[in-house]
Length: 494
Picture 1 (cartoon, rainbow, N blue to C red):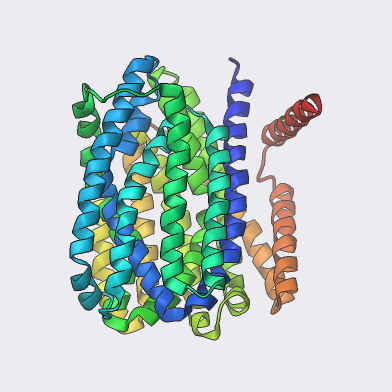
Picture 2 (cartoon, rainbow, N blue to C red):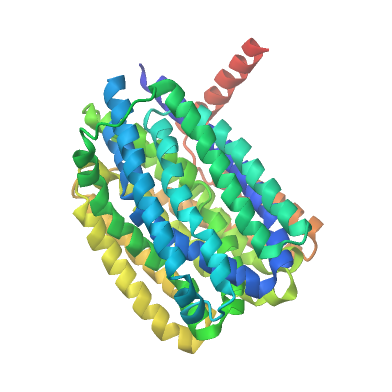
């Protein structure tokens, strides 16, 4: 298979995921005002704390087996081994998830009093505890599809299930069920999503009683990764707990809404990582180091091409967006969007360069890197929340992401170097600055002007980027040929 065809397949797979991710982005963008206006700051803060709690526990309940599925089964050809490994991991995860769900159910009263500051929240936590079991097992079928790069099928499933999620949550809010309805909707969606994906996977692999013949190897790879999830939770989510403890759930709601908006700057990172990991694992294991470097180089480069202007744009548009999409109580959080958005940009260095650690099995480095960033993050949050309120937690998040990203870049270059395209990033920053200046001159205060500003900003950014030669002729030619090839395939299908 020639290089052009390989990169075309990789680009097409990313295109599938980006296409569905844009749909999810739009659905969440519509759902954002429905949730904030339907729940208000206090209930939205409670919901954010519930999600934060579940996001801490699920990785431990999952025992890292979803990561083991991608790393250890991506190159496996024997269908019998795949079937036994998958069913063995699913059984272990189900048992573990059930145990953690029961544990959260039992400590719900304590959490409601000590963190949520409201004993009435205990019932919400009890119902939501089922999500630990459901989310723990739901990732395994999707990970198997990812391991074998069935990206198109995986994205079709995600599109239908995400539409279902949106519909259930929106219906619950509009029918007046508030947080009870939201939790119930998410539980129903997760059950249906898991069953659909599991059915598709088992249809291909077949069913048998698991023999657990290779489960030790999977646990040996996956379990050491679980502390990393806790450390990542400290960096990503612990601020909700800290704000709730010191300032109350209403401020948690304000912060969470702004954080969700700022983190849209990294919306491309999920799709990219979903395709990148199994692709580079395959090329690396086959000894194609040049190909591996190329995938890493262009993955980082094209992520930054989107993320940098997104961070700039979200920062200047944060206040009008929150004014339009939420209630006035949420608007003070607009000042933290800048810190979260640029933190998400730095996080890309960890996410993409960290793939090298997985390739080389140097997973102990992840503990070191995340440990340093998490320790710094929690110390800064505890200091700054007293002095700067929710702004202090946002500053701490940016610093932690920055340290994590830069350290990961430095450490991983010892094992596998690739071109990080620093000159391109500087050109992207310059183009983004011109874009922001134009948006500032428009001064959007209505939904129509915000949309016009976004469209104008995209056009201005790419025009400036092309004028200063941010993209090479080869890259432009590749994208032109890629579009032509796919258009010709569409015509053939018709």
